[in-house]
Length: 178
Image (tube, rainbow, N blue to C red):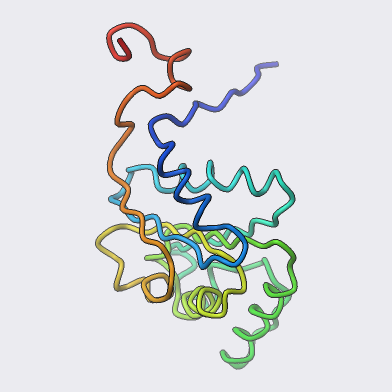
C-alpha cells in the first residue's frame, strides 16, 4: 500500500499567520482573493486544518456554476432546511450555524455563490456568528456581495512561493534554495 504524503505548502507563512489572526474567536474573518490557480483554496485548507485539529468545527461551503441556480446551493445537503420562503430558509440556515460551537465557516469560490448563499455569508459576517475564510477571484469582489461587505480582512494572494522556506528545504535542494 502506498502512503500518500501531501506536498508541503511553502512560502506562505505570512499568509497563514494572517488567516490565523483573522479567524480567532470573535473576529469577522478574511477574504483570500487572487487570480485563478494562485493557490487560494490550498492556502485556506492548510490554514483551517489547524483550528479543525483543535476542536473547532469547520464548515465548508462551495460556490459552483452547477449549484448557482439553486437557492442555498453552496450549502446543499449540509442543513436540514425544507424548501420554502427564502427569508425562512435563510433564517433556518443561520439558526443552525449559530448553534454550532467554535465554528469557522469556509466558503470556496464565493464569486460563484447563488444569491441566497451570499446572503447567508453576509449575515454570518455582520452578526459575527462565526469567523469566515472566503476565497474568490480578484476580479469578482463586487459580484460576491456576501464577501465584499462587512468587517473582514482582505488578503490579496500573489503567485508563490516567493522563496524557499524552512519546510521546503528537505524537498527542494541545490540551486533553488542555495
